[in-house]
Image (cartoon, rainbow, N blue to C red):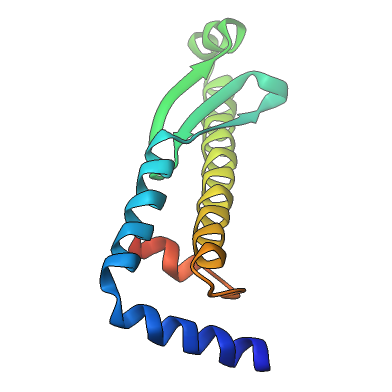
Length: 125
């Protein structure tokens, strides 16, 4: 309980120093712009590279899967679900990295444990 009060006091102090908050946000944004996460599915048959800004940068599909996609509807449906799984895996990884970056900045600013930082992550995009 006292840790939360301490964090609230530090946050109130930071609100007075908006430049420190802006700088922290800028550092997190820069870090996330450089972050790349690779999601996979189908044992590596599909790879999706996602940026820390939650954008899909690249999709790689194994040649055997591409060849099979031309053959029949079932393989096309399988490929679609594998692509979705790989993208979702990459996005989950990127979200975790973003939350870690926000937590690290909060700790560096003396805010301690902010608890769930998912909402803060949305502000940084």
